[in-house]
Length: 185
Image (cartoon, rainbow, N blue to C red; front, side, top):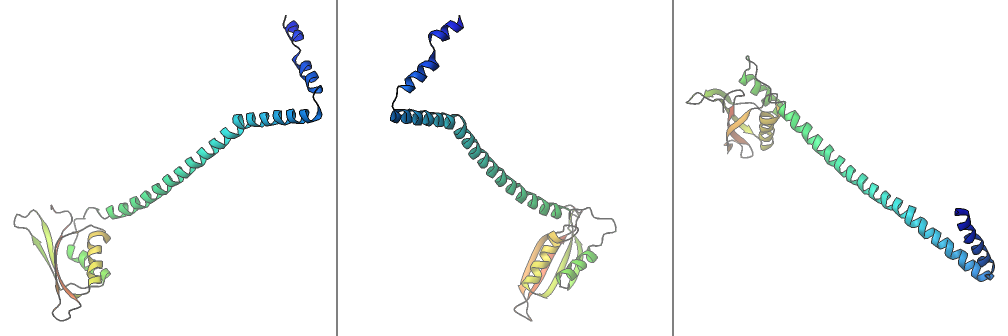
């Protein structure tokens, strides 16, 4: 039955006979139109979707690179803060604040005029009064950084008084109160 259907409508022979009746110019035009139609179908079915997918993937790769750069930035910040938090180590029982502060002062290039341990009136906080004479602003900045962030134990500066030195107006006389680590604040 199916064979009879195709025999009745012999489409290929009809197309061949129709094509052979065309003159040379019409054959070229029909061939060009068929090739153009085939190219448009190929473009719509294959080339355009692949191109769009490629553009989408390139955008996703760029977004991931941006995300990776942000993650690397956050990782470096994390490492920086992790190093700062390492300074929160617990203070050993034989800890000497005066020796520790003297080491920090030597590293900062200053020497203390006086260091006096103190306790608050309610005895809940221990701290140290520190006096420095004749230091530069750079030395003060370096010392403060080393006390609060640069040492093995993070000390906290409770109070800071600065005056211009009487002997040399380009230097400072400093008074600090440094809270001892491990004491209640």
